[in-house]
Length: 311
Image: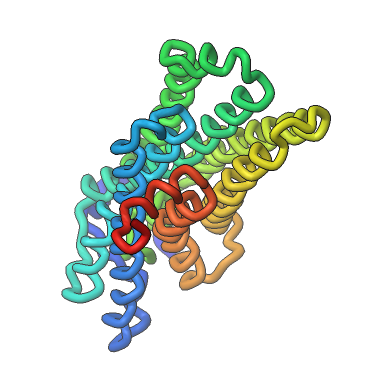
């Protein structure tokens, strides 16, 4: 039977990632898909951002939001994959508690920013299609900041609260993180005291950010589709734009909810949780710019114009 915890017991300040240690000699081969994801994400997102910045015709709120989403998508691979490759190829799998908490903040803040950007994009389409005469008033910088600032404050408060609570947990049993990055519950589950408040705040963050944004996005698109069907004006173009956003939303929010809830419900085995979380972190950053580049006519045409063969 486990002995009661002593008050003077020390907490680990150094941790080791073991997310892919079970692969043994095959561990180095896992670096190949991560390298592919890294270069695809870097190239696709950089190209999309460059096209939006360089083409004056794309300097409108919708395309600016798309480029912002690409920037957020590109940040996580740039921050995480180099360290992950050092872990896989050179067994540099250690990380201090403070560095782990900083990494945790960026991982989860990036996720909340993605969710919030998708909500802003849904609002942009709502004003463009349902309130076209007042679109520029609603999407002007002062009015736009009224939507942006409260949501950003919500994201920062939730993530900072999660990180602070994780930093106060006593880690005295094990310092081995069964993951490849410092994800919240992957670290907190190593705590030897009660972590109920951490799980509760983590779930609260999921519902206040991901679920809330998803419900608002769903309501926006229901109103948009009803308006388009009733008016019958420019329905094909409007629906095409909305469907592109919906594809991105389904991909991003499905990964986010699955990875977040898997730790709360223990619905997946250990290896499955690492896989799902890794896909959440990196796959959307590769898929999103490709979908926007292929389905958004204006972006696709400007990219093709840059190709010598197309010219």
